[in-house]
Length: 189
Ligand code: THU
Image 1 (cartoon, rainbow, N blue to C red):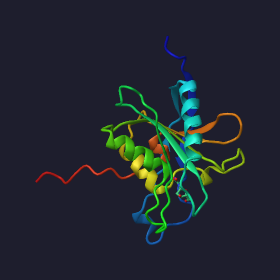
Image 2: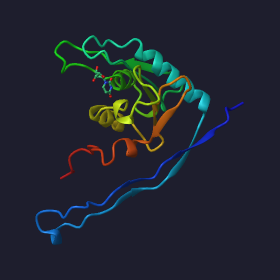
Image 3: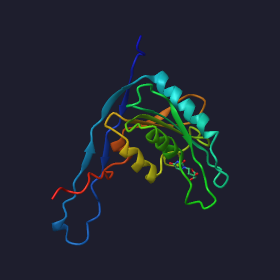
């Protein structure tokens, strides 16, 4: 029997209109309000809790001798008929710039297996407690761009809130990376 689905409400997100007068020439710039409506998504909570647990475990395997900040990721690809859970952790390098984040470790592994469509991604930072602000446990800008390129409107990203009970902040890709770049290729001429 199929698992029961639970509704999760993604909050409306509004970027406020600028409060300062733009410079130069306010007459040439019309600030536009951007609004994304509230949206209800339906998920199998057991599956999501399992992904979060696997992301937490993956964080324990991080190779982070420089930052000591351990991050784990666990994902399922929509185009993987077996729904295999793929995990990854951050891997640091003494050059520092070659460091790879947990999200990209997992996503690049999935892509290298031939999968292209991300369904669910859970991210967990080992240091996270329920008091940790979201900015201290959410994907970096580079990872957001990579996540975007493998995402569809159905993709959901779960950021572990830490603590003994499973919990996560939930995003779709437009909330994770508003106005993200997508290269469509050069125009035909
Ligand atoms: N890190 C991730 O694994 N994912 C992110 O999205 C943010 C940062 C890692 C990279 C580095 O090893 C450590 O966290 C500190 O920045």
